[in-house]
Length: 255
Image (tube, rainbow, N blue to C red):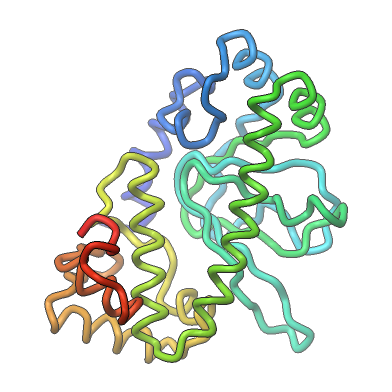
């Protein structure tokens, strides 16, 4: 089955979820303890657009900041353009995650965001969101939490790039994706990579050939089962050890 065909049922399901209270991503995307009245107010400002096709942009670098975007299905890649015209991948966003917070400080986006596959998006005009957050303490706290997560993600990328081996970088990325799937109440040991090997290499500062070799080695040693973009973590403890050689079995998440 093609990537586009595989995403069709997911997109259809997302489009059927006509409001926040019915959305399967509600526990991930929205702040906890929001009462029904507040949820109705929040739902009234959200725009649900037609799905983006693969390669379509949510916004471009230096575009004025007007909204943030919640991924309902599919996946989004953020990237910046270097002075020489090369693309530098800065992040990947999965369902339930918010895209566009990079513009909060400067009034314009510091990166571009593009759909990696057919992707359904909720557009949230920031002026309306800011107004509501002043009335809803839970929403305001949630926005601060999201900004903190964005900073944490940037720090994690710097740590990934500082790691000495390709194996450590890729194992760390896979564990991060696994944790994000678990947060969405999905299988943490079996998931699909929406990004290409080339995007992974760009993000981690590795050649695409190196990325492919590492996946092959992890498969040969029984740590992973790899079928195209489908990943199964077979030995989580060993994957944790590859990511952080000093990690004990007790410290490995989900081992």
